[in-house]
Image 1 (cartoon, rainbow, N blue to C red):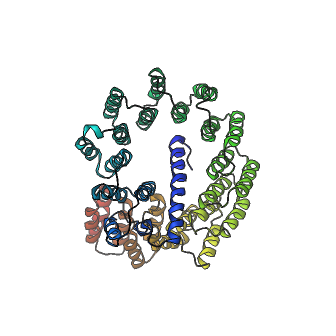
Image 2 (tube, helix red, strand yellow):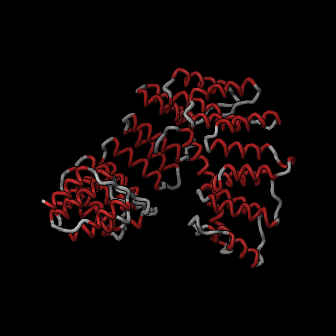
Image 3 (tube, rainbow, N blue to C red):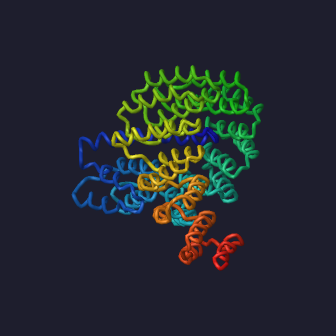
Length: 499
């Protein structure tokens, strides 16, 4: 996983841990009680599907409304980025008057309105509240909306209002530091930390971590070290594994191996031995240092101390082994994954497919993929596209063409998939010269369900049609629909028909 900006990744991971814990509790409840409200909402993954009818039916059936349960549902939906549905639950909860709405509930609703309907709607909701209801949490939620949209002036103005009202906290200053990180005003971040201290607002561990990140991104390791030492001296702040992981990453990028190793030692000492995310970070860092032995030691510890390895953990380990060229060991880890009972997520074997492809072992990659197909697994288009790319690199265009057709055929497995332009252009150029025109037309029709044709693809098609003496009017109409204009080269090819 990318480690910079590390603060964002750390916050995201910590939130995921909380969300997964809450989800597991709700899931356990669902197993024993099929009337659990979350078990009805959870399958509605399409954000265009409203959950309000489900909520109304719950009441119509005479079921009780548990406010804590609704709050947990909102939290889980937010963690899964199902913001529209989370807002629907929040607004339903407010409108029905079935349970008391706390300032925290209102703050969450402002945040969701900002995400779903925009900042203007969040401001409108806030302004309609009575002044007595505009607590620090609500002001903070509005500030967060401004920060998320990168609105510097509005964010600073909102922070000043909160200061004047005595609502300001370390969280709000942290938001401003994140704003400066987001808007690439990194040099302003340390000033916010200094301002906190001047105004008597105690920084927390996140405050220091954001500031350290701002120095590290600018390769200012002197100030990274000064701030880390300050954290270590402050008993009420302290340090944690995430901070040392972040600093180690900066040392690795700077080529300071000994300092990185010392930091990783502290990182491991601070981490909970059952924290899989910490192991993932450590393994990734040791891969960056080329330390396979340390990686394998940590992988063994992770398997021993954590109840189960998730697909995420296998992806991290496989990626690190492939990075070091340890393909034999990667094959063993992939074998462990296949026996783990985990959901068959093709992102896991795809890492080894990439490793083979990058090292010219594309035939072995295809054999691995075919073996999974023979086991009844349905590859994603990415899997076939990896093989196609490998064959393009080896100039085996026949095989590349067949693999790309397979990728397009299973595009429904990953509707967001888009082939690499350079790969598809190479294959397309070859196909229009070496394949039967009807086969190319079939391929183009299927390809249009995935991407729009670019100028070079149209050029290859026009050349093929002209060479075969076929009418190009349909192609020219398609070009116009795709906003691709005729250029001199294309016009010269069209004019050649008249000679």
